[in-house]
Amino acid sequence: MLRLIAVSWLWAFSFGINKQWVAGADPVLVTVIRLGLALLVLLPWLHRPLCGRAGIGRLMTIGAVQYGVMYIALNYCFIVLQAYQVALFTIVTPLYVAMIHARRSGSWSPGLFAAAAASLLGAALVESWQLDRRTFWWAFAVMQISNAAFAWGQVAYKDWRQRHPLEQDSRVFGWLYLGGLLASLAWALGGGNWGELPGYNLKRWTALLYLGVVASGAGFYLWNTGATRVKPGTLAALNNLKSPLAVLVSALFWGTSGKMSPGDWALLAAGTICIAGAALAAQRATEKMESSASPG
Image (cartoon, rainbow, N blue to C red; front, side, top):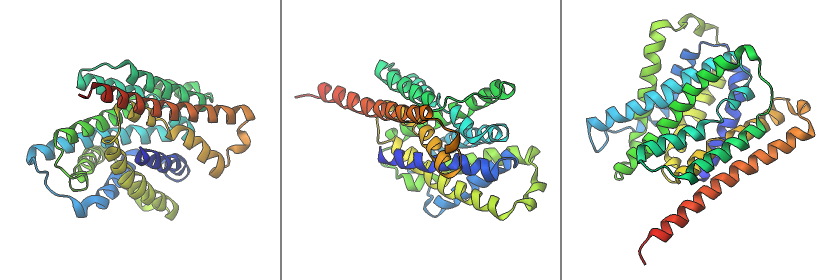
C-alpha cells in the first residue's frame, strides 16, 4: 500500500507540472516523449520473460492500452481543462477497476464496489468546482477512455503476475512501456506535429524529463507492482488518492490556495479521509474473509 501512496504524491505534482509547462504541446508527441523516457529507465534490466514470446506480446498489449491509449486521451484533455479539472474526471477510475476485476475473476463482491464507491464519493467531495459546459461532455467522454484504459491495464498486469509468480517485475516491466511507446509512435507518425519540437524551451523539456522519468518511468512501475501486493478493493480506492493530493499541491505550489474557502478545505479533508477509509476497510475486509476461509 505504501508504494501506491508514494506514487499518488508523484502524480499529484504531475497534474500541475503538465498544465503549467506542457499543456498546449501536441498530446501525441508528449506521450511518445514520456513513454520513451520511461522505457529508458527500465531498459538496462529488460529481459525476455520466462514464459517466452507469448509473454512479450501480452505485456506489450497491456502497455499499449494502459499507457499508450490512456496518455493520448489524458494529454488531449490538458489542452482544454485546468489541471484540477483533469483530476476531477479521473475520479471514476475505481469503479472501472472494480468492474474489470469482477468481470475477469467472475466474482462480483459487494465490498469491492462499496470501496470503489466510497473512494468516488471522497474524490467528488474534493473536486467540487464547476466546469465550462462547452467542454464538459467532450472532455468527460475522452477521459473515460483514459480511465478505462488505465484501470484495465493495472488489473491485467496484476492478473498476469499472479499467473506467472516466478517472473521478476524489473526484468519484464519495460515491455509495457515499449508497447505503449509503439502505440503512441504509430499515431504520431500518422499525424503528429513534429515541427513543434525545436520550439520547446528548457522549462518544457525539464517538465517532460520529470514526467517521463519520475512520474511515468518510476511511477507506473511502482504503481503496477504495488497493485500486485494489495487487494482489489484497496487498489480501486487508492486510485483516487491523487485527487485530494493534487488539490493540496495546487493550493500550496501553484497559488490556488487564495481561491479556496474554508468550506473547500473542509471538503478536502473529508474527501481524503473518505478515500483512506475506503482503502483500509477494503484491505481489512478481504483479510478477514481470507482468514475465516482458511482451514483450522
